[in-house]
Length: 268
Ligand SMILES: Nc1ncnc2c1ncn2[C@@H]1O[C@H](COP(=O)(O)OP(=O)(O)OP(=O)(O)O)[C@@H](O)[C@H]1O
Image (cartoon, rainbow, N blue to C red):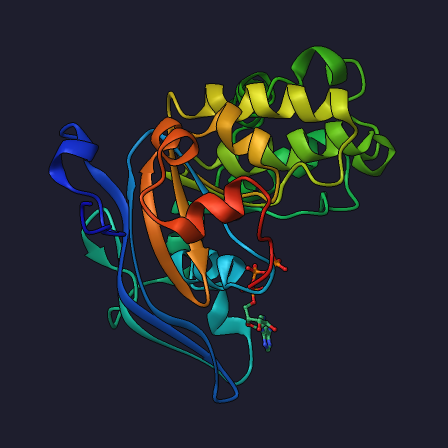
């Protein structure tokens, strides 16, 4: 049996550039360990799924990549986190810039209480864009890329809160991609959507990987199998195994991975 390695081996990567990498990442909340030396590589312009039992540290790991853990009192992060080779925790890293480059989509759609178009324009205006025409063009392009334009083109001035949950989640994606990020982190993004919206959302995730790097946490194994090129299995605050999704599902190297994927064991 090969020794499983959580970091990507060159043959797995097929020459792909790494968008994200973690080495020996440790996260503590008020002294309680949540991540215990995580290694993970996330190739550029691919979908990587992060799966594992509840409490194994998936969200904590996602939040290292855009430094959202910085906002949690008593949270301490150690180890190495890189975005396209650059140290995300280096002195002088501007957090607004990092978070523009690494967008995040949460479980519960979180549109701002603004119109559809103002939601998407929000980050553009924050970045100093003033030309109304350019803002309109960028809003339309982002809504098209998020597969929402046809549904909202006649209601751009309506409140975003009036959209369905599935539409709101695609609007949040449009808001994130309007500012041209490199990476989209998604934390169980479809878990509150109905089955039809979920399938639409999954199609969108696959399409997004043509331009962006996607790292998505999911509890839904079928979803991981449908959308992800690579799947990483976490347990007990570590990434235990990562591989091409097909290999993880058909021929996992570790018994723990197999037990989790097949549903024999879903606890931490
Ligand atoms: N803000 C926080 N403050 C204190 N402890 C936290 C915080 N966030 C997470 N933890 C703890 O860190 C550990 C990992 O939690 P995390 O949310 O990262 O796991 P997860 O794999 O995403 O779980 P789930 O699948 O249930 O969402 C858990 O023990 C959790 O209680």
